[in-house]
Length: 242
Length: 119
Image 1 (cartoon, helix red, strand yellow):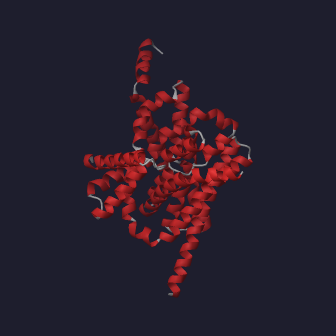
Image 2: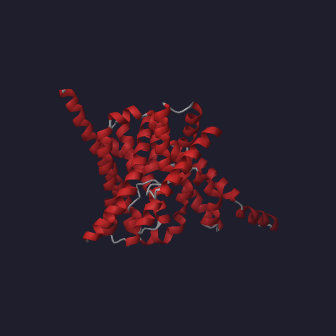
Image 3: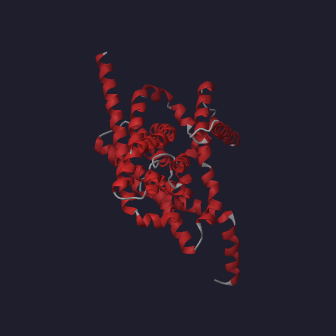
């Protein structure tokens, strides 16, 4: 590197501009690949973008903190995007009303399965307690999951990563699972993917159909609220028994 | 675009205030979503601008998870140490959740449909 280039790098690596730009570039490259694959769930854009970014940051020796100073502007939009989910939800209000019983029962069953099967399997395979507790809120959308992890004794930043891995797994696997189960109703497919894999599943569902997306958004919101309310209580109750 | 974005931020802000004020375990944006939903029910729908803006935002919802996902680089050690348990737990639990939720809903709907037919 010539001294000049070096100086430019020193300047750029200290501004938020670089982190923000590479996030958008990596995502667009990932999204292009996803589209080229015919929206194959295996070419999940979040997974590809994260892989590109981690490789890039490690190669250039850039810390996550420095990167996040720029990427936080994208991260911030999760808030208004969550609020915006009210709109597709409203559009599907009639369908949701008609499916009230399956929605409530499915939510309860799915939410409990998500949290307790994760803890049980991790415990069985000898994972440490903080890891088990970080896994518990994995099906809940990132900001809620991090809050829950903090409350129950997990590691919030690890939870964020596990949440995203769960989102990718659900978005990738959903189609195959539902096809194998011969479930074709977009409402059920959307809702189940929203319970299991929150916003990333919801993003995938929206790409498939508006109705699926709206049910996924509903499931994500409800599961977030339910898990935030129930999980800390249930965990302290089970610990009391043990 | 601008007024729609402002509306979304205002609802998020109100949600945030409620969450802290009432010490709710649910984060501000989720409460903001519920409040906006209630407002839409009262108003009888979203205006066109709010619809297009939210559509744009939600179309690229996956982008918004990328910065947090990149945080995996902070936990490479723990992931390397416990990857079997982590992978098995994530994989089996996510599949189980998909199957249980979809199956339970299908069974509920099946019962509804049957009772509908007999009625």
